[in-house]
Each structure stands twice: as structure tokens, then as C-alpha cells.
Length: 288
Image (cartoon, rainbow, N blue to C red; front, side, top):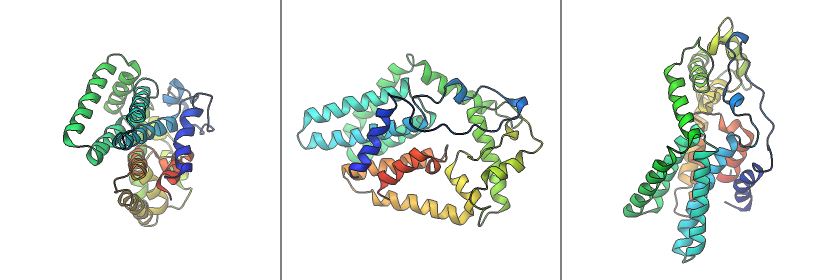
């Protein structure tokens, strides 16, 4: 990863402290009878945004890779500084910039780092330290508890005709996406067809079933709707190729692998490659 990749990882956390960076997206078209305060209503898109959580997670892994490399080069003070900065980013993710996607991606990325870089004893010590840190954070971070409890409640109470929720919307979009893909499985409905397909599917529906969106919040489904199974195969082949490309043991490969894995995990819950910040971080971080 060159200087441009490092700049991409550093610029976003810096900007979040001085003001919004990207223009807000157009809201979903919601039926009047099913309006409710969504996550964007409760937490307006000012300051920290989803793309900030995405970059913060990568900063944690980048600093971990740097700390490991500097420690083995004898630069112990620099390594400890990287550990402190990574801990600050980790705490920020749990207290302030709490993202459900980050809460899924972080354990996988940390586990991958430990598997690639650490011996079993060191990996166990890292896991123990993280568990102790989480045990201290859980009773003190109302934001973290709220995000997890709300998610479980939204999944439990999901009904297509119910009031829109963050998790419920995704479940409904995914359910409809499968039906839309089944109508044109091989070549898809064409680029830019997502909103039209959801508008047809939402006709006469209420609640979450009546929502119209141009983003099904899943990169694989978004690709399959437009380009069919052929386009989906190309997407998966790209991810697999990049995973193999960054399989070596080096700082650059570790950061690149984190970018790819983070993008894959994030793409399960968002159309990450279609987002400006997520997409450019992937392009710069993977060297595409």
C-alpha cells in the first residue's frame, strides 16, 4: 500500500472532527402510514457517519500491523504508541462511533490478525485483554448496549407489514431481492434497475413491505439484481483473487487483507462498493 492508501485511511478520521465529509444520501421513500424515527433520524448524519466507522476499523488493524512490525524491528516506543492509538480507536468504536457492522467485522479482523501474526500464547494474551476491555466497556457504554439490544429487538419483532426499523428494513430488502433475482437470474435486470424493481414490488404494500429503495443493503444482492449470477460470479472472483494476493506476511499485505475482509463483511449489510468512501478505500487499499 502506497502513500495514497495511507492518506485514504488517515484523512477520514481527521475530517470527522472538523465537519461532515460526504453529502447525505436521499432518504428512502417511506409510506406516510409507516413513518417512524429511523437510525438516521435518531442519529443525524452529521460528524461521524457509516464511512467513519468503516475507516476507524481499518485504522485499528493498520496500527496493529504497524505495532507488530515495529516491535520486531526493536522500535518498542513506536510500537507502544501504535498500540495506544489502536486502543483509542477501539474505544471510540465502542463508545461513540458504534456501528453494528463494525461490531461484526472487528472480531473477525482481530482474529485474522492474531492467526496470521501471533503465536498461540500471544494470541491468547490479546484475546484475554480484549475480553477484559469489553467487560469494562459493556456496563459503561449505553450506546453499545442500545445498538445491540435494539438490533435483537428489531429482528425479533420483524414483520413485512410492520413499522420500519434499521434491521427490519434490511431483512425485508433481502427477502424481496431474492424474488427479484429469481425473475432474471442469469443476466439480471440491468444496471440502475434496483429502484424500479423495488417500486414494482412495493405497489399496494404497507409498512416495510411498502418501502422503495435503490440500495438493498447487500453488495451481492445489489450486483445480482442488476447483473445476475454472471456479475455475482465476477464479484466473488475479484474478492477471492484479492484475498490470495494479500496472503503474504507483511505490513502492506496485512493492511490490504484487512481492507478486503472488511469490505466483504460490510458488503453483507451494505452495498459497500457502491458507496463513495467505501469504494475508494477498497480501490486504494487493494491496489486495484
